[in-house]
Length: 556
Image (tube, rainbow, N blue to C red; front, side, top):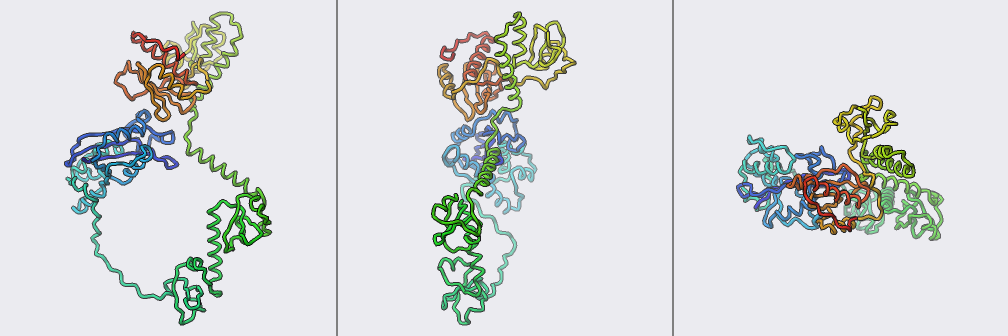
């Protein structure tokens, strides 16, 4: 069977490749679709999150972020393909990408034969004086409309099928090697034979077999009866260690030796140089060392040459440490640039950082107030409400307005209620304060519970133990730790601290296998994260009127 395949990918600033979607259609020899495989691929890291790139055509950023990993997609594709399938790409680049990711991810070669349709179809159309091009252009040339948008892999393979069908391309031709492109119809013009030329005109350097001297072409010292062999450069002269003509080759040999030495020095990291026959060592750019015909040796450090008993050259005056500091600065600057480009930013974004700052402030205020004596329970409750990091807006009993935490109008009020979002405060019948002017831009998008805290020494193994104790199936998929509970599916993003948690509610959406939603909280420890999930499931069961089995004591 033939498999029409298309793969889309994106390349980041340091030329790393990340496939984004892949589609494959199994067809018969009449180009009828027999089976279809399609999958989006989750980007490897933040350096590939360029959502306007054409490789992300056909879906939203969320669809790609919640897609399967490249390893899982390639494994499923490998299981879907048959050993006798012939994979058909339209262009060579797609073939190279598939072979590359197979080798990098699956550590194996593509077992199926791969052909490039453009090599076959172009010759087929040219021989019939028909217009060629990509599948969409072929369809347009013959009055057909291929399904769009372009660069969406599933649409691209359907366009390939439609194009091959409309031109009635014989599928059996793909079993053979691609036909050679027909020669241009212009008559071949045989160039006139070149006029015979002498060795002197053909080669810039001449070797006299009688005298053993190596000359430059046209040298007046070459005898009239000389038997000469021509050479394009001085390599033969240096390799055979011949004798140079003292009249014509002096400047050429000096330049060739200097260029050769510069090339050899540039291939090393030596900063101080010397030769065996000399008791002097030099800096890299010294003219004395560049003119030598002996083998050049050296050392990265000044002491390396000084320890051989040699003295510094009086011409270039090498000194210790002068070059080293500059080199170290250059290396540090280059590494800093590479670090900024090649390693994706895994720190908290602005909203997450604000949530963490609110958490630190609230926790500090709570600890500072532990020793204080509140005059009443109402005062204590108001304090805990104001220091709750998940609230952005506050109102007091008996008042219609709501305020920001810093508003002076809020001071001295009691029975305070908090709201996370602006619209929640509006829906409760309150109006915004005209003094502090709260707006929706102060909404709490994510928060850190005040009961959370950072714990040292945690690892993924701790999560595995907790899941094992509860009987939850789990796996690690790149930066995500994934596991399932009776009430839902969970993914913990381990790439940054605080951790980010994604969830699928299987009680409300039992057939949802991939559309995760983000929990509006950040977590500082894996244990707090797991405890939150247990409490979340218990509350979810209670809302459905289903009895919830208590977790094991081992989870604390």
